[in-house]
Image (cartoon, rainbow over the protein chains, first blue to last red):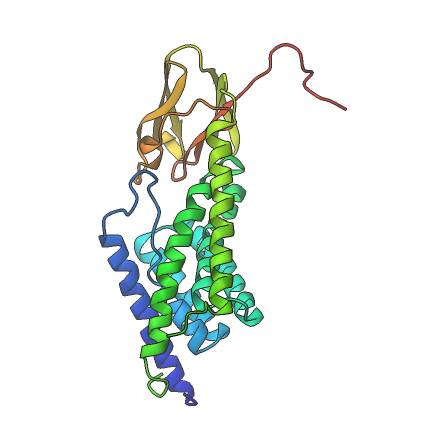
Length: 167
Length: 130
């Protein structure tokens, strides 16, 4: 896709799709009731797909817009800060790992899922001025891995199935 | 059909195994290798709110935020502390299992309340080691 306005329109569609996925996630019952607040991160399917199809800049722009809009619609300022920390860190790690070319997209997505949680916890440590919350990382590392695998598999499927000429 | 596992997939599996191993070690450490604490410290927005002993049963109402509009009720019973009710929307702190081990905590993010179990040494060790 060379056309700039076409690119902008496509970014808009991706953000919209990410918002719909975020909304579906809000509607779904909690996955893991013992530790509330754990989410699959369905919108990240779009981010993983874009990272492999359109590169880090495009994925980054869509990810930032998605985080801003989702936090405004379903969260608050605190949620925005947590999401930003998680989103930026996980995208940075995924971009670096993709460049290193040692992992498949699923592995990259797993690293993204886990570092997303690490970023959120780091923000919580900063905001709450307590390292105790770091203990949550034990649970979040496991759920982040599972989420990363599922998201990664979905991303791979999309990259394979959606024809190159379409997007 | 290729029988051989591609190198990238092997690396994926190594990554996943490492993450899970770290989590497992953390889990075992947090659940089996920590001694029980004897006090709970309540922190609101980073500043200390109060310290209570775990050995006596009590109920503490914690009011926070402007005009004290946020409320958390901390209950200490049988040497364990838990959040009985809270005004926060997610209820994560109320769902949290009772805490009693040194370093365990209940965190209410919306109300910015942190309850941490500590092991206060009253006798032998000095407070500051230079």
